[in-house]
Structure formats: C-alpha cells, structure tokens
Image (cartoon, rainbow, N blue to C red; front, top):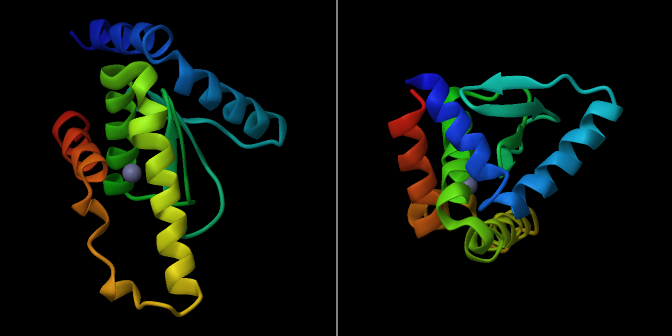
Length: 140
Ligand SMILES: [Zn+2]
C-alpha cells in the first residue's frame, strides 16, 4: 500500500512534524523562486544546490549537493522519518545538534585544527547513525 504510506507520511509531517515541515516549506519556496527545480525521492521533495557539501533535511523536504548519490538521499530521508517520529522534539534533539556538529567538524578541518581522518565517523552519533539506518531500510 504505497499510496497509503505516502499519505500517512505527509499527514504526519503536516501535523506532529509541522515545525520542520514549515521550515522546509520556506526553504523550498525560496529555492523555487530562485529558479531551482524540485525533484522527488520516494515521499520527499528535494532540491540539488551547490557542489560537494552534503545535505540537510527539513520535514518532507531536503536539500543536497548536485549529483547526490543514493546513500546521501537515503540518509536525509531517514531524518524525514525521524521528524514524524519525534515531531516537535525534532529540531532540538536532531536538527539543531546535527547542524552544529556538521559546522563544528567543517571548521575544525578547514582551520587545520584536525585532519578529517582524526574525527569520529559521521554516523557515530546516535541521530546520524539512526538516520542512515532508517533511510537504508525504507528507501532502497
Ligand atoms: Zn544527517
């Protein structure tokens, strides 16, 4: 029952998960206005922007770098499932900590304080490992 899952996902995203969905909708709107073409991946609407930086997810929307591989799209979609599980807790338990950790890692490497190889694996923190696991399980 694929259509049932799609409807359930969007209903949950627009109710329990509305905080991140509203934020994602604003970002999506800004990208549409600036001429970016939306694409779909399973239940998700996503955009490709920039080169080689990764991605981020906001409700049923995600943004990834150009030519993103399946693994990255699955990971961002995994965060989308976390959003319908965690609902209003999502920004505080996953999205904000994930963004802070991402930038901390970028800055530490770019300023030469550490080598990328000295950092713990990206998925070693619970919310990233869980997103990867959910994405692989549900969106192959
Ligand atoms: Zn992530």
